[in-house]
Image (cartoon, rainbow over all chains, first blue to last red; front, side, top):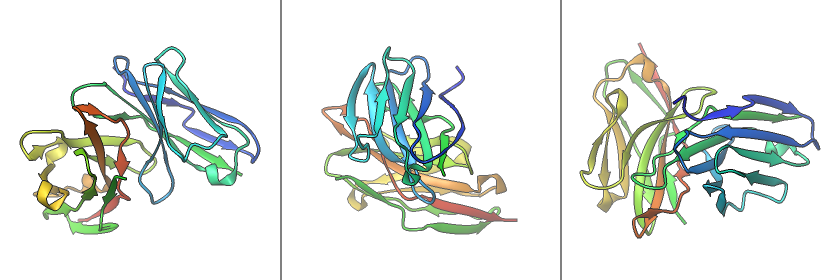
Length: 114
Length: 117
């Protein structure tokens, strides 16, 4: 198993453009999480899925953000009409839905909005 | 709402010295706790976890942490620091209800560790 993977690793976009990030979790993990991390801060929870179902969304997740996990495997996070304040590292994690629920993180996608 | 406080933003130690990173949490439900380490530009690596049972937990890379419910603390320790331990360390708390996780983790602000030779 190669762990959690994210694509792309870096994305530079102009304000107002749409961007989409992909996350591939550890294969047997049925929970998948998205977090956002800005410079000097810890990760902040955005949303999570159990299989295909999106179980919780943070108030940080404005209407411009949407996440999907259509087949309960990989997930995508889309940001529409990007703003400079969206510049951050977007982290994906996965876990089992039992045991100690430890979350394993991917390398992140660093988004820069110019 | 749950919260995590890491009082020390930056700690500097000499190689070979002992280390303790502080973490205090606030949560009304039953917590479970983690320490993660992050190198620059990288994702987070799990060091150790407390879920239940023995309050002194061992992790990777020689780290350990002790859960003290009365103090709402989960401090990370290492007896002898190596230069490769220089990184940023995050404490995180999750919540359980009826033995099932709510899912999300709440992270502290992080502590940057610098190691002098």
